[in-house]
Length: 175
Image 1: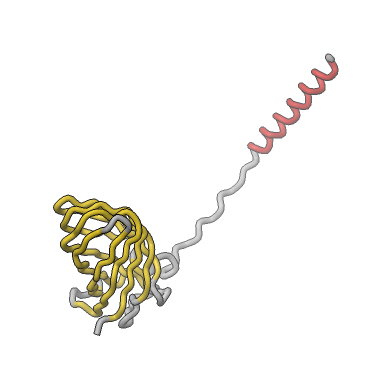
Image 2: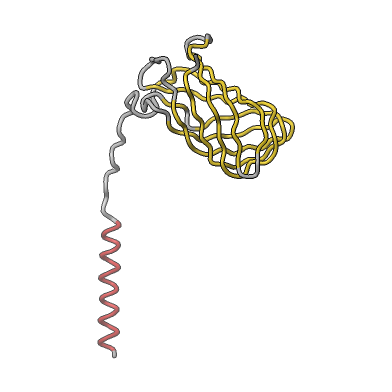
């Protein structure tokens, strides 16, 4: 019995000293890669501002028309317009009379081509409105793959509404 206890004690001491030795090994931290322009977010080239029509949110969702304008970060004149629809599927209770949604637009370089923001964006929305209210949208997608919208946007709206939904927004070049 004493030999078994002594063997177990010596084995635990060897294990503990090996564990402490392993902890004492110094490892240099991995180098942090340098930021390269265009690979992580790109250049902000402008803003997409959407006016969203009013409507009623049904228990399981809603659909509202949107008219959007892209404006360059260099000047305030509108460069491109889009029409589309915002569809929500989930809890969407109440009504809104009008909403405004603003996105920052990013590209790998400081350039923009007409119609580049067209496509389908999908994600989620959370909104609360009593008179005037706000919401947050997390939408990703589009068709070009290089020009993209800021992942999170803010919505300002008027009405009485509560929403937590899966959301999709389709943009089509106007005219």
